[in-house]
Length: 76
Image (cartoon, rainbow, N blue to C red; front, side, top):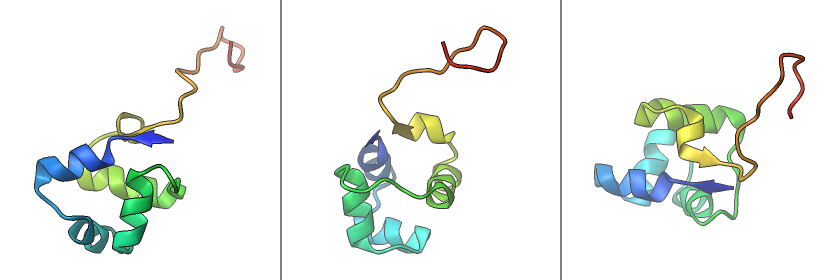
């Protein structure tokens, strides 16, 4: 999963270790997230989004594009 975590962290001037401390995860976890080797759990994704004050979908991109429906609740 692609994400903007590295850029957003750099904008704040935080190291991987500092971000890990803020999120209560290891520096290695931050590195794995930034390099796409690890997808965050939903609770971690929410914590990241809250920390940066952005919706999850502006930080993470699953590469599938937007989900649309024709009113019946199913993707088109």
